[in-house]
Length: 274
Ligand SMILES: Cc1cc2nc3c(=O)[nH]c(=O)nc-3n(C[C@H](O)[C@H](O)[C@H](O)COP(=O)(O)O)c2cc1C
Image 1 (cartoon, rainbow, N blue to C red):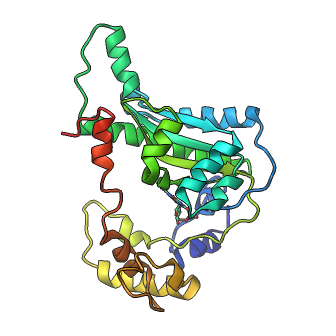
Image 2 (cartoon, rainbow, N blue to C red; image 1 turned 180 degrees about the vertical axis):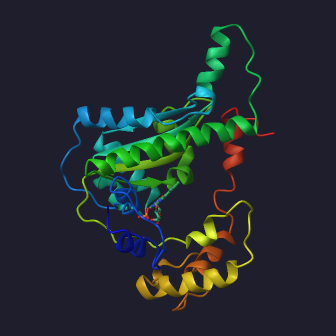
Image 3 (tube, rainbow, N blue to C red; image 1 turned 60 degrees about the vertical axis):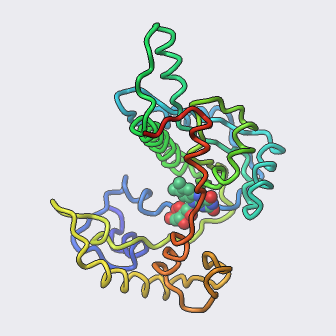
């Protein structure tokens, strides 16, 4: 049995009494993203195995409504990094995957069988995103298991008008997230999570203790990993200052619309979100 107490303290900053972490689960609790990779390549034979693990994820009704674009051309990966502008380390990754929701394949299958596709709606959009995300999550776990590391990149959606043509994404296909893949130069510290009492509800949803729980979480994070004034969100709107906690930084981020053109973009890609 793994050292449950140490693992859970690292993850939550508090003890989780009674929890016993099996050895097989310990690496999942110890995981973290990597934002710098060595020069070492990832062999195709290994990458194909990890992609097979990703494709083994569950998929809604077995419809498998996602695709993944594998980028290995360093110049093209750097192009994406340059467009994003603030994450130059993306270019150090030997592999960049772009995970996409895919309604197109189902539409083509209907056409192949001379039937209408009658599910261009918000539910299908959600199903494509969920299938895609589960596959990406399974890829991440498989990569971690062999010593590789990854980092999802939602910022491909901030430059969707350039990333989408670069990858030749047709109507019905949109990027959910990029994923850098490579051998880590170093392992970042574990990032502290919300206490289970905030996220895990027993039988019924109950957030009556949220404010008090968050105050404790902010305090623990402030002690271990304070938000640097340079990492504060929307510094141009809210004056930067010391001592801002996690929850205030979340509010600073969520108070300003992010990628509000996304629905309009999806419509140009043929999605009807009604
Ligand atoms: C959907 C998704 C999109 C993300 N996008 C980015 C991104 O664009 N850039 C980045 O540096 N990290 C990104 N991340 C990584 C998160 O910042 C990271 O998971 C979080 O800070 C917690 O750190 P940990 O994964 O090491 O626990 C993303 C994560 C997810 C799940």
